[in-house]
Image: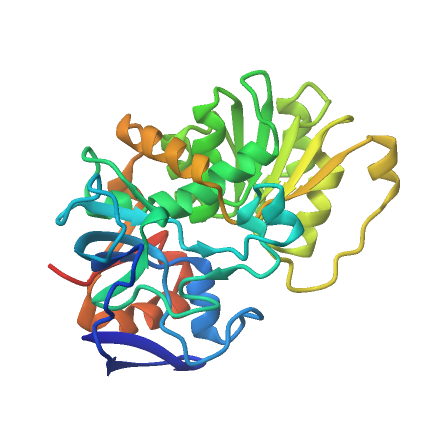
Length: 340
């Protein structure tokens, strides 16, 4: 079978490898749709601190069960369309013992710490699978990235009484907006791209701020009666937005960080104490987040066609990485059709 490998920064090639045989407790997936995420782009650019090259990337999948190993339930028949949680946990670290498998100390994610799904077949444990007969394969490939945003909303304990500011309207930020709006919160979306802000409104933001042309502070104060948002969720990963989250959130507010800041962040730490802030990290997603996203997508509220910017054929998977790396402003979500 064919697989696309990132061999070194900015370099990809197709290789031939054997089709894996599903072990006991595993299913063999025939991959149909693969989504590209920011992690994949960082790996392609050689900027991922968590990934060694060469690597078969990607973990946002829409697939079909092709074969089953022993001890796979009858409720997972051949031909079922599925997606999967791509995180593999150790089961014994402090996070795992608390049931927080998403932040396992020794987590290995398909496409990052181990080879991923930009290939024709992938064998995975059946317990990792999620499905919905109401969703298409491209929609199933959106479940994981949306789950990351929904998990951040869960970490922030967002309720319908909250005003939530979301810094960044990339794919993950859009998942945050969807998750907060799904809970009934009032969402304010911030970005420097008017097209992304328009998409944020379609997903559930009631107010938008272009902080390249408007004052973030003045607009947030105006929109919150001088208090600041109840929750600020940072989905960009820049030192200035890490700082802004703490500065702009209300007293007794909550800050959630999803993105990594590549450079050192210097804080005015008095706000931590004066505001008595809850400052939270958010990593990956839990099974319940996947289930909630599936319920959300089944409602038909998510503008899938607007979010998926372009679908490339498998033969152009390498070119798709280069196009996104060269022109990141042109794409919200790239998907690759592995099996037509």
